[in-house]
Image (cartoon, rainbow, N blue to C red; front, side, top):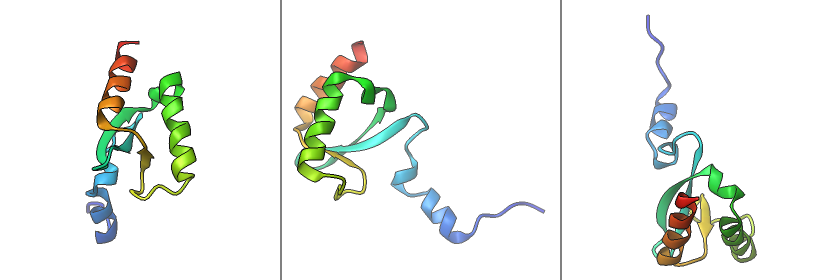
Length: 87
C-alpha cells in the first residue's frame, strides 16, 4: 500500500512557489515584476542589502506578489547580481 497526498497538497506542490530549490528564494523585479530565483547567500552582501532596504522603505512587509519585491529595474538588478556572482 502506497502513501498518497491529498489533492490539495498535490496542487500546492505543483504551484510556482514550490519550484524554488532549497537555499534559494524568489524575488520580483522591475515594472513587469519579473521573477528571479537567487541564492540566499546574496542576503549577506552589502549591495543586495541596499536593495532590501529600498524594498522595506517602499513596501514594508506587504509585498503584493506574495514574494519579495525589489524596487529597481531589471538591468540594475542583473548588474548587481552579476557582480555578486563573481565574489
